[in-house]
Length: 238
Length: 238
DNA sequence: AGATTCTGTGACAAAGTGTGTCGGCGGCCG
DNA sequence: CGGCCGCCGACACACTTTGTCACAGAATCT
Image 1 (cartoon, rainbow over the protein chains, first blue to last red):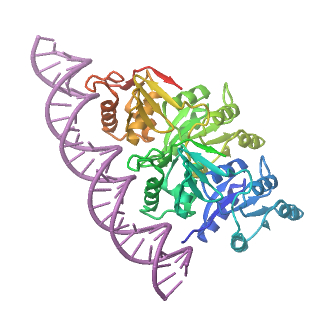
Image 2 (image 1 turned 45 degrees about the horizontal axis):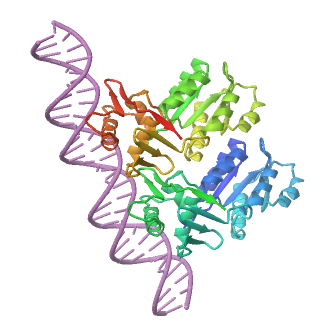
Image 3 (image 1 turned 120 degrees about the vertical axis):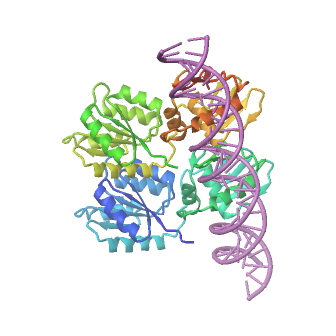
């Protein structure tokens, strides 16, 4: 499984974003960028991020408070970046929960080494810790996140494979939205699509067989021709 | 699927509009322009916009308040443009919810790079967040947006294809208005018409077969000779 | 290691969409 | 009033996208 890690660069300077982005892409990472905290949250809502490079100085919400709030509800590894002369902040940064710290200017070699190191050690649960719903309800189903189980209203547990569960979770967390195959693959498998990738179709088909009343006339996961799929059932979080 | 993104330029200076417009068209984007907030809303009501370039200084309603109100009810990506020397406004702009910020003068290369970056990350649905109706009623039908279903008053669900649903939705959101083929194609498919494009006619024909009592004598979707089509049934939002 | 489950790929069928053609109808002009 | 021109409706067809199945390699379990 060649799951290239997905790195998110958060920095308000475009030159930095582009420079770092190019360096990481060349190393085989998948990269997204954001100029501020708001953009960062947006990216995180739409894709599965493995590690965040976070600039200390940001317009609006600054890096430290972002770091703290990230730590509060998502164990995603963070590497803090700071302008030189802000050495003092190292301690603060690490105390805020960053996994590593890198003062600018830094070489791409050093950055990449640290990223790999953090990723290797950060195999930890990226299980969000805070206010994530314990389970979701939709149609006549309850999806139990902790137990990774799908339970029907009559109490029967329908077994889901790992892939089916991850895909269903991706859907359930983003109902009423058209998700294309790339996004689904990223969200559910953490990897990018190869050309003519039909694996999502197959998984959707398998999932429908288990959750739809009539798999031939799906009501919960609808196909958007040329666009992807949409989870159309109403979802309630608990 | 050549779904060229549709960019809306909002600036009161004609030269800027023309200049930027030409640059974007050359890059393959579809472009609309507006000189002020009122014109902007009009364009947005008539077409599906993927991204807005918004000048900070505008006559009447200024860019910042426009930005805020856009953010309030339509997650459309925004890039703010400002005259030089207004650096201070960057923070304000981003806090108001702009996705990026570009001080004048800027090169077209830089502008295009930022547009692509924002579009890439803003892959998401431009699903307005605010008070969108859950469903629309007309004639003897109910169109359920979340479920993407068309239900007759007797409770029977009539299956619509993706294209039929999107077209019907475009109509239902703009009843009693003449919509030409370009607009319909833009609203329902997000693309521009190619020469001698008859696809809308075909889709209207298919749609009529499903919703009209007598498809040969349509009462709901009327043809405007030489102009397009009009959704003539009364629509109520719920 | 052997058995079992899971997942992605290829193949083929089915559905959705757009283009082309033909014929009809509306509007325009004499 | 009649004929011409251009626009629209309907249909057939080609092409694209999706559904599903079988199967093989990968992963996991025993």
